[in-house]
Image 1 (cartoon, rainbow, N blue to C red):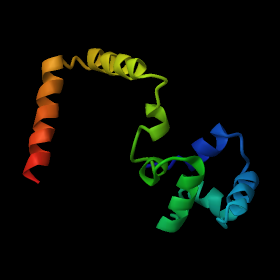
Image 2 (cartoon, one colour):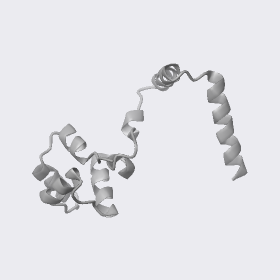
Image 3 (cartoon, rainbow, N blue to C red):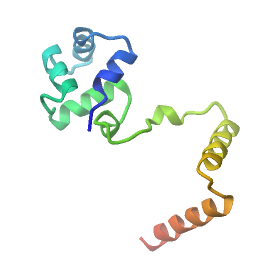
Length: 115
């Protein structure tokens, strides 16, 4: 699985050197060379480094590592109605009925009640 360090770095128009400097400015010491090795997958950072880089970009470690597809920032809406409209589009695209959704929500509630 490919990590998203380079993707996020490029999204913010940062060079490796600039990212390293910005990380250093907030107390995280990661060299440009180490960042390049992390991006290429030549070296796997320790969990502390994953956390530092994820913190900088405002994403979860699992998103940064390539395990999650959605960031918390992807789920921000201007209004409750915008969120509802998004849910409706997802349900339509995946052919999920209101009943399917209600059943699964009820099932999750039952699991929580049993804990």
